Image (cartoon, rainbow, N blue to C red; front, top):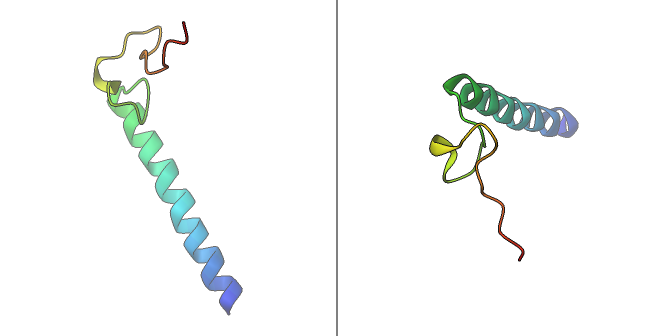
Length: 52
């Protein structure tokens, strides 16, 4: 019974994550999780830090 509860929780969490990614991709978000995701160019969002 405990294993079934743990598996159900994991399925809900993974399903929610997949649903969020699909929803954001349908909206056209280029970089999911990036604070600048709404203004990303086609080359990328520039969320990576400059290491110079």
